[in-house]
Image (cartoon, rainbow, N blue to C red; front, side, top):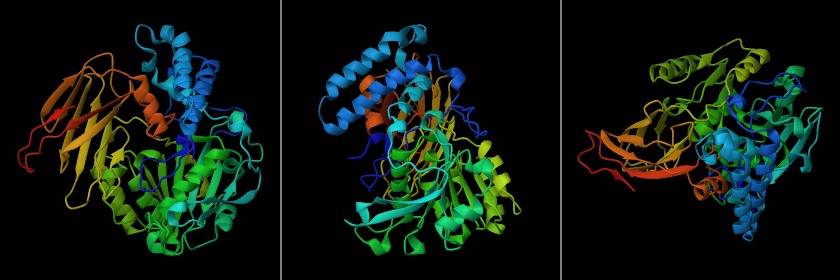
Length: 453
């Protein structure tokens, strides 16, 4: 069984993954992109984070072993209470969201990871049983020659090279500057047989119809087992028409897992801009569809999509530096798919069957401690809370299609751990409270009753 820190989420795939990592600067290697995890907002020392992180790791190990979980969680509670109460300054220790995230990064000891190869392109493979008992996803990986886990975490650029080059050729020819190679981890996938499945989950139990989405998410887990990857600086790159479209489709399905999507020599996919509200795009050499999509994202109030026909590797690296993941955004837009995406950042809806449009827009205003949701085709939703989104010391007002719910939402240790075990939390977005709500019908959906549970 895999470490839940590396599981991508509760999808049809039982084991899909992302590395568990936390952003902090390192002066021992060339400058890497900035992060939006504000280290200045942590209240405790790195040694405190390591101590609590070790206890978190023991909880995860007990959860996986199905033995000793109660004792491990009791020890973690004690570790948090020991010093964190004073740092919380009258609030609860679980209000220290950034410190919890910093600790979660240390739940895994990356310095003891095996199979770490440095300063050269090396091939790896990872089993993906979803597509068949013997099916493996293959990928090529470059790690800096001076890579050291203790100097991490490192940005990750994961590439879908399409049919224009082999994965190894892509890494050699596209990413050759020392500025990039000395500062980040580069991965290139061997794509599945059929291009039509590159950006989808594919067909379960059918190796010939394997999906690039499932393969990519599984590769995340394998990379995360080996390397200290920064969860707030994971960038998805697609090259050529097929690779670019696949990258956009995967980003559209999991917008909160990536910092940005980069399309090289490929046009925009035929997608709505909604799920790219907080997921920026960079088109290096895109055509008319890229320009059109950039206009749509701007019109929808999302982050700017940049179109740069003559972009160089240096331009792409500079853009990466300016765009860390928006981990806890104030505004979330979700256009549901069937069955996913059904979650983005701190809000989730039940999986859709695709028979009607299911869309929501949610805005969190921490100053007024209010979350306002406008939804269509949705009857219920779940909000994941932390103290970066709202102040959980005060009542939280949630307005759903005009219907107001106001509650004091308590932080809860067991809830926090459940979100870690289920991989809904990561070091950049850790949740300490969860609440589900019924959603009244929008004006054009008919009448319905709303409320919460």
